Image (cartoon, rainbow, N blue to C red):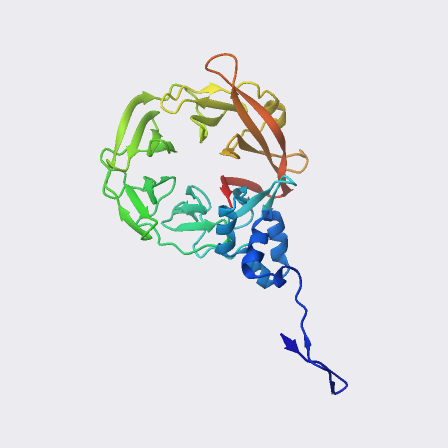
Length: 375
């Protein structure tokens, strides 16, 4: 590109604008170079200009990263930090081991404060239903973890909170969470990702209240336990819940955050314990070798478990480090791996690291969701 300039009314000879760096390369070569950068380096590259931000956010770049095997695992966390009005997403910085807020465009839908159902897809996370200003909502949002954007999605047919939701064969099945549990015609809905449409799903003999649910990918079925501890399985091909004939054997009041990891279920129990069991047995046992969690967590209970890598899970808990200032809060995390111990039928855990991942002066935290995304 040629341009001329004038000084004191004298026009100088046209000169060529210098092009250097990555912009001097052919587009295809430039994309190959960028695809090999880490997500942290890409984020730094995107800050420089609007043109570079557009390039980093392009689908071509992220598709190429996947094809070249350059994708990375990033942990996304959704927190509602009071007194902020809306929850917001954070991403875990693998070097600093801190949660960094994500600056993205505004969600076009109202943001639920709590009781949403979350579904992880290959490219992002669905936020389904929940509570807004004390009322159930039918809104559905999708957080695109590649571009950090919020594409619009159609709402469900009825409002739901504390529903169960699972993704099977490009369809999201949503169960319960509505007021009329006796009406089987609207108790379940299904969202087709290909057509972006919602339809009611008639389900024979649905459970009254689903307390926990998990998708068993090897069987392509949703495994649930109801409020009485009875277990059932849902198969999309049959469109009905089948009782497994088993009941939860561990009589504890606080078994939360089922986490399917490998072939076993893990959850948080009272007293800063991690429990495990075989999915279709639900005979919860304590993971051994994690006595250090007692001192790390203090009197604070574990509030969330999620897969971190294919070998480890992450756990989170909230700490008030200063007794004289109740508004100074820290969100702590630890990464744990598991192995079979010498004693048959027992599992041992190992803490690989732990520390505060978020801290500041806040009224309080509400931990909503966490999941790793490959991008």
